[in-house]
Amino acid sequence: MKFINTEIHDRDKRVLSTNARGGYFKITVKGHLDESWSDWLEGLEIKIMGNGDMILFGHIEDQAALMGVLNKLYRLNLELLSVNKVNQGKNIIKGAK
Image (tube, rainbow, N blue to C red; front, top):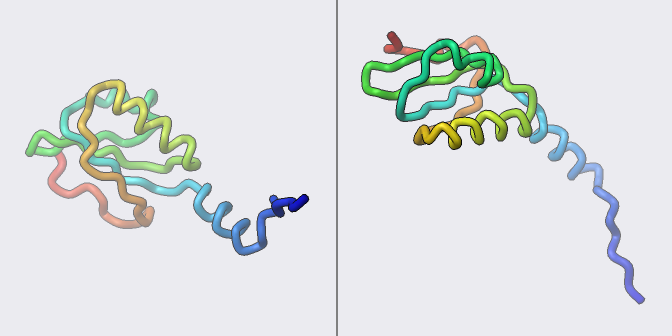
């Protein structure tokens, strides 16, 4: 009988731990929500753009929290345009109202 080695190799552990980390994200959607939704969306900053889009920006703890935010946006029927991990210090939001 042949057994499959189920141990995770050291290289794979580094990849898993790196990918599971959170960070600062810029999420762009078509549609608008007002600032009162910020708490429900993990405290992300909400900026309304002049072209009908909305940018959500802020720190998200990990991939599970990111998926939670994306699922909430989906349930609100907001069209997801982009999700980008960004450096905290960058001037992310240009042209916002």
